[in-house]
Length: 134
Image 1 (cartoon, rainbow, N blue to C red):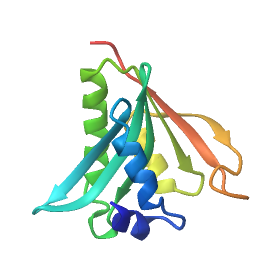
Image 2 (tube, helix red, strand yellow):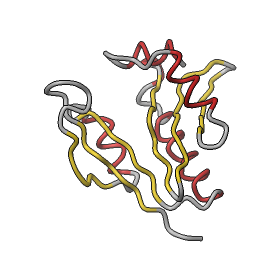
Image 3 (cartoon, one colour):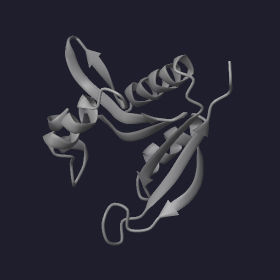
């Protein structure tokens, strides 16, 4: 996960951040995409009350544009339905147009901005997706 993160982001999460989130047995959730036995993408987040907070999603550059990110988001939707979670929240860098288009195409809505979320001058859009009850 750490090596994929380092390929994808200017300021990657350190190993300890992943360990802390995934080791949180009550709230931490992780999803992995594999191809031929190798991890090519992942998503992590926390289940809080009736919401899933997606904190990190990354796909190795060699596998981007092949639907891996979409598959991870579909797995998150499936998990949320199975565990009666009704909303997904995430932040995305304002200049990450590819990710924003993916989220919008999968039913997420941009509901606000977090100024300097990724550092000075690096704002984030807050996206949510409300899931229908079964």
